[in-house]
Image: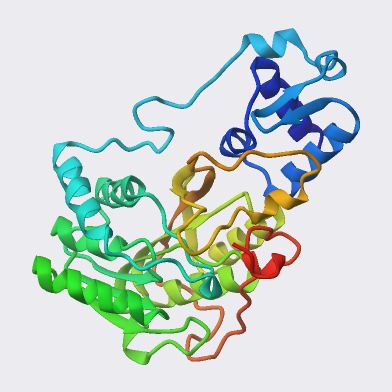
Length: 345
């Protein structure tokens, strides 16, 4: 982890940082960041109190001043997303924020969470920028984020169908659709189950924020791909916090085997809250050997957005009529799930 240690040392050379600021800054497995911070603490390179983490004199001897001269940063306007919301999308964002206030609290049993409202609308804007939405038939494999609502409110797609296991979500989407005059279909569906015949090859676009176990990622993407017709497009998110580069490689290999090209990989496109009224995904701080102040509200958990496009018809490497195995927790790479800590949260 030579690269990670160097990044942490030079980030802390600028000033004291909280754990949450460091997590927001870096694209590494969360487990590896915590392990590296513990090692640096034990070696006397950093010290910590509830206000944050800073370098010791010993740590400062490892800092290269030339490294510190160069301070690249992401674009202030788009935050590295490539897309900026125009006036119409800003209006959509304000309307969308209103309707999301009714959303149910996440259920840790399904490993639920949801991205910020801005990032949902930014995804709609990016889809439209690439010409993927107009008069398209769209299927969402899971929809904790209520992307279906933002899509339907835009008036761009021809059809929006949500496949999700959580009936509470279906009830909420139906309520919002009735209130706003939106046309959104909901089907209670577990991705482990065979895909209904009428959905196979019936859509132009799928979008998903999958589980990040290997079997979870595989299942969500297989189901999304199976829903697409010729030249179909898929969008999905994948984190570095809880998905190793080996897992990334396997997903990329799966996607290309299915006759897709990966056209876009936009790091840090979507940010997620990690603390909710009934559940916290931040219990992992127990793993650290030094004190950490409670997160003051920094959204540090982020995912990279992938866009994939089929060359002709998707090649279905697994029969969509088959049942799939599914796991919710990867005990090697996932350290945020409350169940790993006796259900605390």
